[in-house]
Image (cartoon, rainbow, N blue to C red):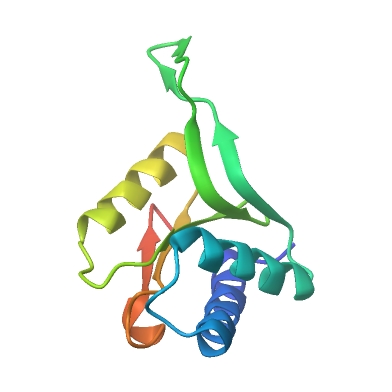
Length: 127
């Protein structure tokens, strides 16, 4: 089983390839997300798109589940964005997702950035 850091390296390489082929900014977030799923799948990673995760509040399962853009190898949460003006709240959002799911690593990828290295943010929760 791969560790989160190894998975994140593969995700970064795949995101760079998607950005290189499709360009950015300019397309909808869903287009980049779908292309990233294709790229990660070609790299033999297990990817769930729009994964539904129940939210438990004080022992009660809420009627509205959490919807993750991508869950890679059942361990890394990926949130895809396609915005010109990045907001650090996106990282806080992913940290909330990590806490709710008990996962340790999340990634925000902003395909709206000039380069993926400028738009790639790792978020750790007790990693």
